[in-house]
Image (cartoon, rainbow, N blue to C red; front, top):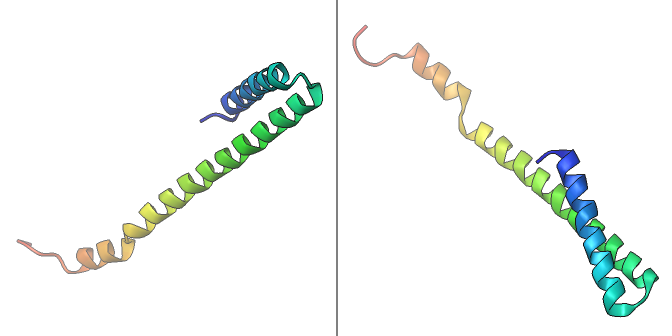
Length: 80
């Protein structure tokens, strides 16, 4: 996901939360608080997603060991 798309989505979602909270409570400050909370939750989720993607890529890279490929090159099997 692009950072630009994420920011647009985050602000759109927090704006909708602010409108909803304002309609429910009638307080602009409560609406602002809920919007800020929505932004924090979205940011934490985005950070978790990025950490998960990096961790998954690192674990896939560790599975494919280049040492075993080098050993197979030194000891070929089959016809020479």
